[in-house]
Length: 449
Image (cartoon, rainbow, N blue to C red; front, side):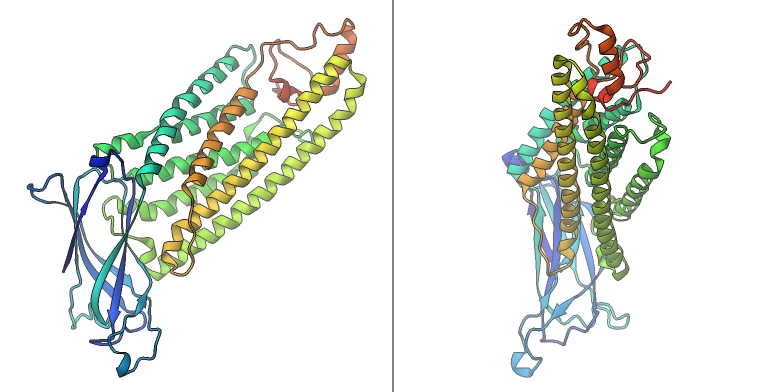
């Protein structure tokens, strides 16, 4: 039996450690027998905690786990080499969502039962090493500070945006509703609930974080499809969510599959932190297949989005032919508007590319600990940079697509009929006193009555 006391230093340094992943590695000798191919190690493990050095330990979890050993002997298996180490792959051991207590006690026992063939054929265990993968203090401070600052920022711009929508006499169009939903999902992922992990033992923090991120992913991907689709002129029906069911449907289905896959591991870990889907051959193959399919689907989505952005650019280029017939003031205004809109579409495409790259890398990083050969590291600056990019993008979208109270160009020309003709060339018929934003009108999209 092996025991280890893990001290949580977060209370001393005021640093919160969000995740601890312990990996079990058995270094086996040839002494006492060879390690058989496909041998299985049965581990009797228990986890307890206490908050001072004198109180009794309180058990958190106890389980019997099975881990398949993958070991290689680099030299020839002769008598002269007896006593050398095997080279074994790291094995998933334990994962917890929060460490709210001061001390943790980890007990590991390898019971042997020859009649039931328990821990038979695994050689002679001489050493057990535990590798801790956790969120360091510096990153935690930056992460908490970002969430604390960005939550009220996005919430304020979202309230301001929706207030501008409700002040108009017309009902909100589909794009405006989707932008509001995107702001809500961004606010949901921004809320710094991690602060409560300081004093509460919330073991569901990992699952809750995955659910929040999954909701935001599905909302962001759906928004980009609708955002590009609502600026295309070749669609007969507009301003209806049902028009996009063929594009949004697979995103929702994929998000649901992601949730089911996550529940298969995170859900079980709520009661058994030692459980891992990578512990069995079937689970490993399923997880590997999921990572590969998710990466392929993310790349296909990005290619489809590039195609839609290309169609939007072609639509805008067609509208530029109407500019020479306008007055100078309105022509300069719309040229600037078109330039800003194209820039926004390029920013959207860049944001989508970075999001897809981040999603693929995060999935590969989640699994590389279980592959043994490949190593992928995600820099904390890249992680916080992507998070900041999402917030800045959502902020800019709500700011740019908030309806304007100004009437540009109404007094720029004394020829009212000429202005009317210019409006017809660049916009559809306005049926309300209050219209959508100029970018929205410029691309020919209006609420269909």
